[in-house]
Image (tube, rainbow, N blue to C red; front, side, top):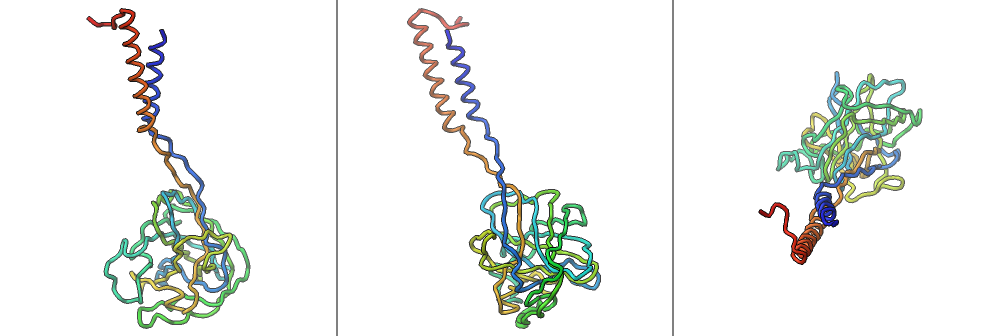
Length: 294
């Protein structure tokens, strides 16, 4: 009689169905696009004689994502050396922020939050980076380096055209950034031996081969004098733009298939009951007794 084998197979089906399914990783890529030559904005950590300045541009994640690396493009003075690279991720205010805000800027709607959400930096070996010169001479129509002021003096118009080496930074995160589905801001900071790193703007709205998304917010900037507040580079400071900034992200999106436990296990249990009933029916008709019935 094959009943024991069918019984074991049914049990196996039920157990398999109840097991958690294996997560599958899919490649994630995102890009704002290439520099458009419109503006370059300072983004640097605090150093001797210089206050911290941060420029931020946004991206959206639709699901849990492991961000493993990034690129960003900026201007460097000729023959300047890179001392350190930092990448920060902010969420959108009022998350991680004092609410209501200070009122020192025209608005905090859709700005980065007050405090950073996650950080990686070369100084503690949590990221590594390489650089590539894309052009020995690249000029932008305007720039923002020091003219970052509280209201009502925020509209400086920018600090004019700048020229420098166009350099691509390629960053790998030693420990990936684990980010849930949300709207974020990306902030790269570069410390140089001399001069300032200026992050280059990119087209807004995003064009191919960039990754268009909604809502695509404009770039924001702040320094230690303005912190924790932020200003919109285009709308508040230059009355131009609005602007995006040139960067990309790469990593994995982790998806977990729908568990089979509820549906498949139910069918397995039903089949098991039918087989048990069949066994009992056969034994009753043949006069067989169950083992160990005494």
